[in-house]
Length: 113
Ligand SMILES: [Cu+2]
Image (cartoon, rainbow, N blue to C red; front, side, top):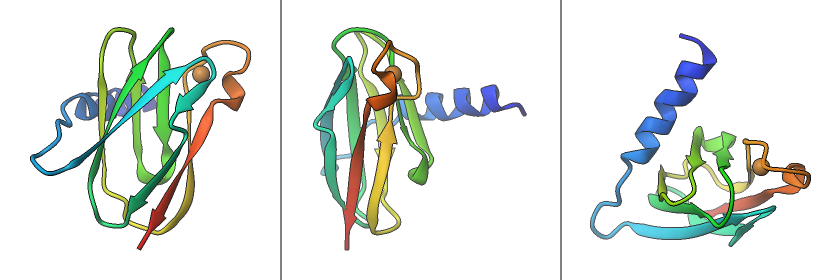
């Protein structure tokens, strides 16, 4: 299986990641070239669902330390379920080129015990 198929598979899972009752939902708005909020604090072992939308163009969301990513398509809500399995501070970033400034589009996930 190529990398493309792998990414597609992850994206498909992400789209189906509806929140279960009681799960925390965090809404994140992407726009050139920031996420709002861009700093998340999560608890280890506590699942959250990120609901990602974009205010302008197609964006990506990638948190490689947690093996999650999604395409954020204009007019749609991308959902990513994340269960932090380690403590520390980790980066997330836009992995779809969205213009000059794309390289600076990122944020952090801090996971506490
Ligand atoms: Cu980008």
